[in-house]
Image 1 (spheres, rainbow, N blue to C red):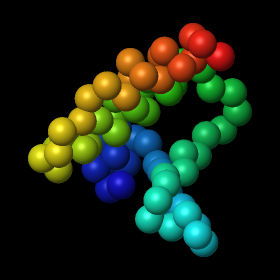
Image 2 (cartoon, rainbow, N blue to C red; image 1 turned 135 degrees about the vertical axis):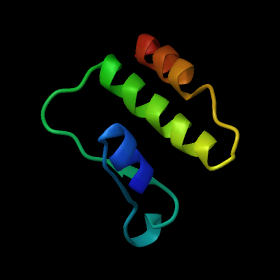
Image 3 (tube, helix red, strand yellow; image 1 turned 60 degrees about the vertical axis):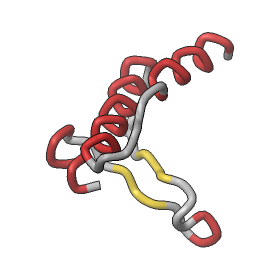
Length: 69
């Protein structure tokens, strides 16, 4: 979470209660659009890759889901 904040200027939080360790929460102010979601997912992918883990496909999956909604 530190890298996401320092490198990308984005803040997330972990889950609470029974969701602790299972989800992340994304804070936002006001409206958001597909470009905001793309930016967040791309930043998350970069951070995961920086940890040495494979990370790709989230942006494409989000675009597909957004277009189907």
